[in-house]
Length: 77
Image (cartoon, rainbow, N blue to C red; front, side, top):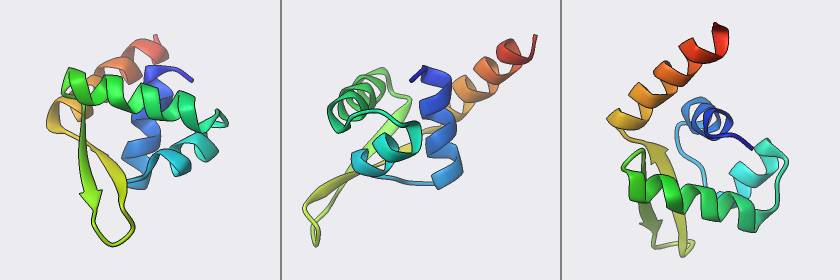
């Protein structure tokens, strides 16, 4: 799973939990969770808690959208 794939997944889903990201990207839960945590620390992804389900949800931040656009243009080249 590349950074581009993960960012695109979140852009497509709007918001997702690590289980959904793992399924869409065809990786293990732990791989998805660690990648998401790295992106949270980089400011590309926001994390918030769903108190009803006691899970974390993730969505792209404005810098995450900018990075997705940048990586997408590089992938097309």
